[in-house]
Image (cartoon, rainbow, N blue to C red; front, side):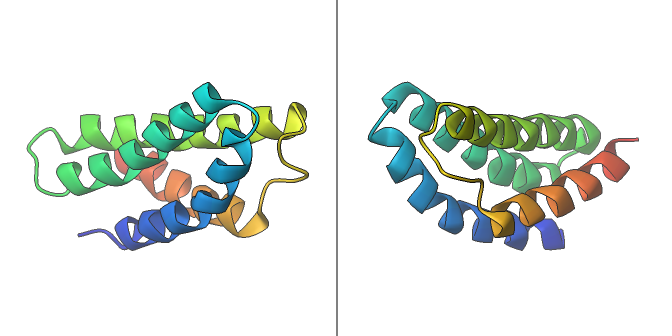
Length: 103
């Protein structure tokens, strides 16, 4: 299993606070963020053992970018004061590895 699988689990744990804050203002955005974040982890796991690894890692990469976009939207709408830097750092690592694996 890739190291970024563990990183994605840490990201999920850290996102709980942001999801709860967003949910107080916008349930739809919170659900979308929750689904996208879960998709990152699930597709990394599935890709680790699949023949179509590149396609699954590509889906995980798209979902990681969607997580970042959800956080940016929440910040723009002032549901969050700022995007947690530790989450942003995990997303950068995850996206970087997934990008390299899909090229």
